Image 1: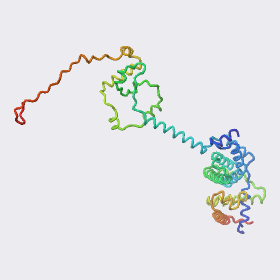
Image 2: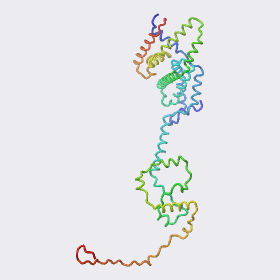
Image 3: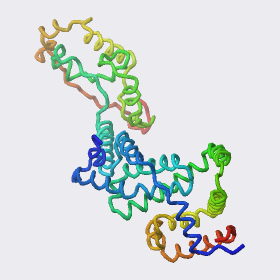
Image 4: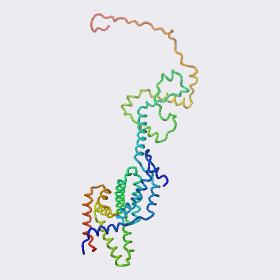
Length: 187
Length: 181
């Protein structure tokens, strides 16, 4: 048997590979491409990434810059200066909150917002008596639910204070201690 | 292809849809046989080769924004088709059954046909036994009369590398193929 020569080998390989696709091949490729999902082009990817980054930054900024959640009294009912300006209302628990209903995901997102450490909470939260806090919370909730009507208070205006004229403050007299002159002796 | 140009543009702003459509169509027409033959060189089954080439074109379509250059497109297409073909070949368990069926149905009519079939089977068996780096070079060189410079461009390797691999591949094939001319 003679060894195979290069030229013969090349011809043999070319002959073996001289196979053409079927006439329907291009048609099928075009149809397949027409059904293919939209290509993920570079421009689209960058734009999508930009929008996503902006959204994340906005959420983070909102959470970071948001002051400690504080329930403001109902504006229409509590307009008296004596109530709105003098009382610092603590945070109302969610059970008494009447905010619009949120989905589970929204609540979870809110709970996942940047958490403060125990030490930070101790430093930033004002101290209130538990009974006072509970009473204020109930009052606010009742006002919101219209179980308590503060209209009479608004009509009466601020609580009258006693006149300063009636106050008589006697002068304070400090008498010198009578000592016998000996150091350390009690009178 | 309704919506073809829109999808090709993929949201880019300054892309001319019509031009992009024409470009991809031109690449598809001029490279379809190349992709098919690359796949056929591995799979040696017309339908499977068409399926793989079609898949490669779909992938090329998705990345066409980065493949608009003709040479880059052809090189990318060849390599993608080759990889997909190897994956198909390795994962396709039907291949064994197909080969068996081919042998059973290959009822030769004449002694010449018997000889031709035997030679072809031997040739493909020898090509299949080559390492992938040598195998792709011998297949690409056997397609459409590609010279070494064209094969080098398609594989993105130096021309000298192609020459040495081609030489080595032919040596190994000649050692295995001892048929007479």
